[in-house]
Image 1 (cartoon, one colour):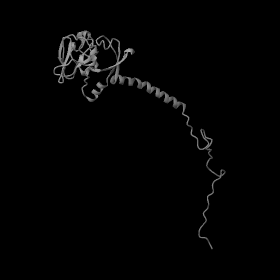
Image 2: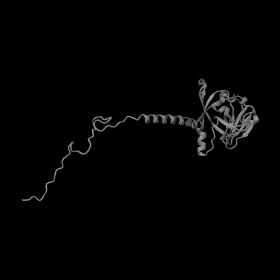
Image 3: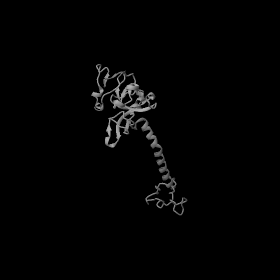
Amino acid sequence: MIDDFKAAKRPVAPTPETSSEPEINYCNQPGSTGYGMGIDTKPKPNRTKLKSFLSTALLLISAPIIALVLTAFVFQSYQVDGPSMETTLYNNDRLLVWKVPKTWSKITGNPYVPNRGDVVIFVERGIEDFGQDSGKQLIKRVIGLPGERVVVKDGTVTVYNKENPDGFQPDRTLPYGDVIQSTSIDRDETVPKGQVFVLGDNRSNSLDSRTFGPIAAKDIVGKLIVRVWPLGSMKAF
């Protein structure tokens, strides 16, 4: 009988002598663990130096930029020049002024109006007639708010508003009043919209709204939050 099926030929595995492929040693490559193909994980010296250089350069470039942004929009250091805020602040005191409320008002488009009693830094542009440089930055305390009537008479400051039609005396009702003595120079002023009435705590030696009138709230740089120097007199406001 003749078998109709031809026997399939079994493939013969190539021997090292007959293989046409080059032999690869998988256990003796650089960095090999002996269990498979090795990978050299050591960083290249040139690449490491480049990364270090770029990191240092980025730090040197970003540090002053961050400092400028913080100074312009967040907080800024000031030094007191003059006696107008004694005995709350003294000449050469170092202060930290908070700018975030003013920055936020610019972002939102809403007017910035500080609270009564805040000590603020502002730019007064109309003081050339009083022997001061135009555009000089001054530091004073907010006494009257927009729409209020401020009356300085007989050494006393009285503020009239909707809540207090008969008037009240902020120097006697707010905490800062302990340092205030008699207020000279009579004045009767209704504070316009977008402005505030400011006074120095040293009422006998202060150039303020009694002389140059209310100031524009938009000219306020920021408000005092802490005296940082002298260290022994550090105080939050």
